[in-house]
Length: 76
Image 1: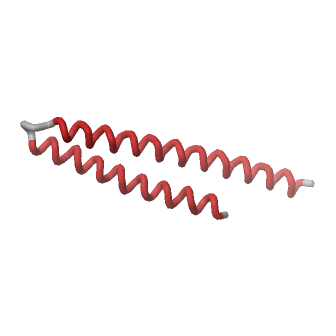
Image 2 (image 1 turned 180 degrees about the vertical axis):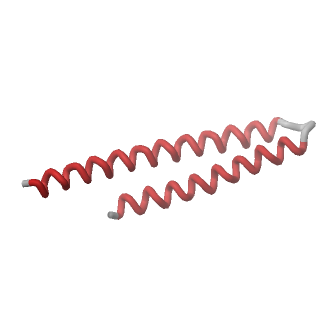
Image 3 (image 1 turned 90 degrees about the horizontal axis):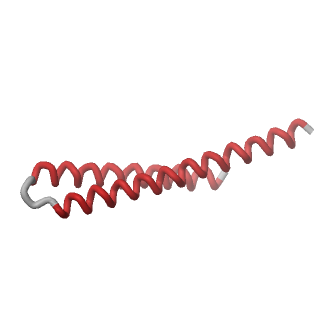
């Protein structure tokens, strides 16, 4: 009986983790888009434009890591 309770808790924890990961992916993607759009609109500050593009690249890498983690979580 305790085992069923533990399995239910584990599933609940796994579902919560998946929700957090999915939400994090959405946030990273939105930030990436915002940085890229802003960078495209900057014409008089190459340094700022490059930093924004670097921020977007960092978001892309984190998004990939989050997607990998989410996929790994779903496989178990």
